[in-house]
Length: 444
Image 1 (cartoon, rainbow, N blue to C red):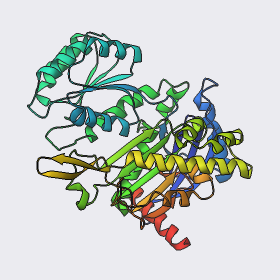
Image 2: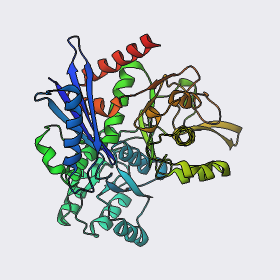
Image 3: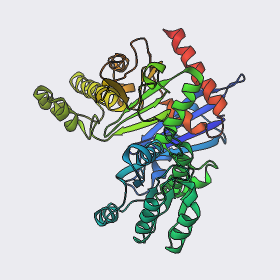
C-alpha cells in the first residue's frame, strides 16, 4: 500500500509517483507510471488514469494514499507586470511571477500610456500584477496606473504587491470597477530588499483556480485537499528544500520546448559585495527558445553551426537510433550552456569619477555545491552528467558553479513530485533528498 501519491499532468506526459514512508523519516520512491497527457481528447483524466494503470501494473494494490497534484497542462498564466522602475519593483515582481509558473507577457516601468493599455488588451492576460514604491514611498504613479488598469474593465484578478500605504484605496478602486483584487506584501519594501515569497504564494493560489479550467481537470479538486501546484513552482520548492538539507543548488530541466533553470543560493561573500541590485535566494528562469524538439531549430540557429542544421533530419521526440541520440545530446549541451549563462550573473566594468570599477549584475552561482539534471532529456540521454560538468567553470565573465560542484542526475524525476509533497511534509522531503544523495555516494 502507498502512503502518498503524486500526479503530474504535464503538457505532453502525465506521471504518477508512489511513495511509502520510511520508519526513520523521509519517503521511499517505490513506483512510477507514465501515460501521454490527453488534452487533445478533451479530458486530462484519461492520461491520469493511464499513468495510474501503469503504476499499478508495476506495484500492485496502492490502497487509498494521500494524493497531491501538480500540473502545467493548461499552460502558465499569462500575466502583465507593472511597476515604477525596471531595476526595482518591476524586476522584483517579474522574479516572483516566474517562480510561480506564470508567463510574463509584458513588463512596464513608470506611468502607463495608451499604447501600454492597448497591448494589455491584446495580450488578454489571466491576471495583472501591480507593484511599485518602497514602504510609505511614492504613491502618485502607482495610483494613476491603478486607475488606468481599472478602466480596462477586464474580468480577471489584479494582484497588488506595492507600497502598503495604498492598499485600501487600490482595493476600493478595483472593487468599484468590478475587478477582483488580491493583496500581497510589498515585493520591494525597502532599497536592496526583495520579498517575493508572499506574492509567489498568491500566484500559486490563482494558478490553482486557473488550472481547473484545463479539460477534465475539475475532477481532481476532489482527489486532493492541497490544491494544484504549478509544476515549475513544485520544482522550485523541491530545490529550496534540497538546498536547506544539503547546500546551494542549481537544477536544470531541459524539455522539448523550453529549458527551465532553478537556483537556490545567496552567492559568495566575494561577489555579493559587488552586487548593485538584490537577487532572490530562490530564482527561476525560463528559456522559451531553448528546447530539444519544438525549438530545436532555434537552438541550432543560436549556435550558428551549419553542420548541425543538416542533422535536424534526425530530430525525434523520443530518439532511438545512435544518430538521433547524438543530435539530442548536442541540443541538450547547447541548451544547458546557454541557459546557464543567461541565468548566471556577470562581472561588468563601469567607469566612475574615481576610475574603473567592477560590479556584479545578476545571480552569483559560484557558491553552488550541487548541479542537478531533472525532467526529460537530460535524464534520459547518456552523458547528461558530463554536459552539466561543462558549465562548472567558476567565476569568469559569468559567475558559474565552480569545478568542484557535485553533479546529480535525477533519473526518477523526483524534484517536482517531492516539491509537491512538501506542501504537507517538508521535513520528510528534506530527509528524502539527504537519503538520495547518500545512496548516490555509496553507488559511486
